[in-house]
Image (cartoon, rainbow, N blue to C red; front, side):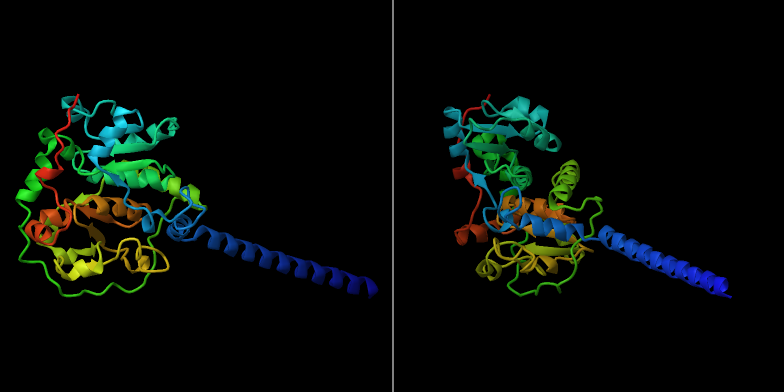
Length: 337
């Protein structure tokens, strides 16, 4: 009888141990599942807004955009203080470029930067046709910690009249939507979730590096005003300039105002941006919106920069309001090689 009791006791003990082991395995599996489903976009946004980011600051809400005029590029170039990267096509680069400029494709720009010793240089100037693709590239490089990087304002259009065709065309057609701009207020969307990323990484720096490769390979994401006005309801349109200009000179019908350096962060209105709709960002010239678009795409948003901004839609209103415009006065007439 005693042996039977001991046997039952040992059997019950084994059952208890197996039950505890099963619960442990289930708990461990749940923990792993929880780890596997972290919101990578939120981890990345939190990281980029913190002092732990490569720039040790929230770039989007402090220094962005970092833009320098052609006159400064010229002055620094004459004393060897600026490293110039021209991201136009090799064909266009060959037809004329700034002395000492290096022709680098957008997709290769981070690899190129990583291999440089920038100690001798005060600044790095990214140059394109109009200043817009350069803004996109400069934003990504800044976010990666390259604090000497600037885009050249207006691109090669500002360097010499021979390259100003794209901006001249944009402003010559720049009043096409002047009668359609409105002062009616459209409220921001409800607070929701951030986009879902699936890099498989867990830290902010690892996610940033993975996303950076993807965004660079995708290239500068942009859209024209013609496409937007054909079906404006297809887009969540971000008017990225101060609130007083939202009503005067007005905005694209249905556009929602977001204030630069204030609203695109987790504690403000970042989560009001939708994850199920293309986001169109526009500013005065398309240059600042290119900077912001780069950041939003890193976080996983389907964001696009509206080319030439308000200059390409309400040019005369911009002139009347004393706002930033491209004109002949912006063309410096500097020499090229």
